[in-house]
Length: 246
Figure (tube, one colour):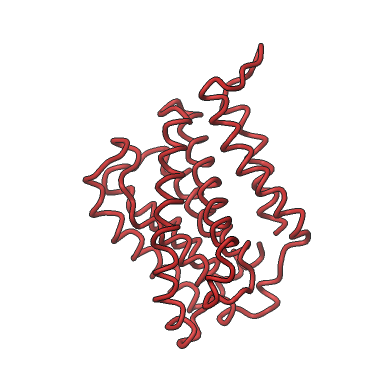
């Protein structure tokens, strides 16, 4: 996770963060008038941006997605949930580029299963984070917001992501704007235990998301079961630990 903090020492990475945030917000804002859940989320074709720009720009894409979502919230959905939206969208970009590694984006077809798994994992993490935030403040049931966020993220990214990557990757490579080109090797080394971290992020994001839905829909019912938000805290902790290790 070292690159997430050290990227701020690179002027080009800061510019790419601002670029990502600007593009994400510019696409989000016009669709604020098409709400899926009024006051909380809307139709979001911009949700391909975190994955695509995360893969291209690494940590700059992650910070840009987080900031762009926050900017978009100022146009109709700003509230306590915006804090969780900030980190949820950060993870939606962070996890895909960490899982993708150094594989060439020009060879997307060969690594399509990994791309799909990266999108799904990022969408799970985003949905879990935002769903937890709205659940803990009793603003919206976990099942409602988590499903809406996951579908918005995963479906749109899977449809638009490959097209955007094919369009943008050759240009990013030609201009040496890929994050692996911009940051020094010592500032982008993997975490202390990447394999363990990978297991933990899948367990935390997938277990929290699917387990939360199972409890919400009454598929899991145990006597004395604590509040759903309390049940989700261990999964979030596992997810964050995994993020630090990969």
